[in-house]
Length: 101
Image (cartoon, rainbow, N blue to C red):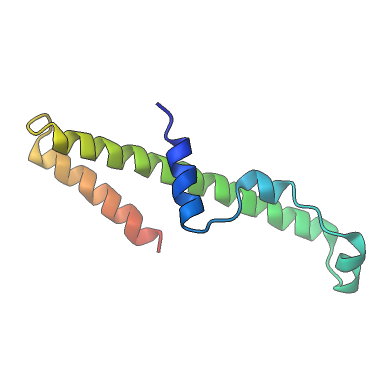
């Protein structure tokens, strides 16, 4: 089961406007760039880096969403997961949340 639709709904709800592909496909007007003295190659290089970060960001979020769903399922099926395993999973989620702020 892919969690991508749920992730996309969450991101839209939180006001995340762009997907990596949106950034990748962004074109700037040549006149506007020249007036501001932007170098098109530098802008493209920067946007390529932003796209890669966005892809990593989405992958991390998707992994965390899968982990949270697994935790919810484990909690609802009491006894199928040890307390130690539950604590390890919770620490992973807490660590991710702390580092994402």
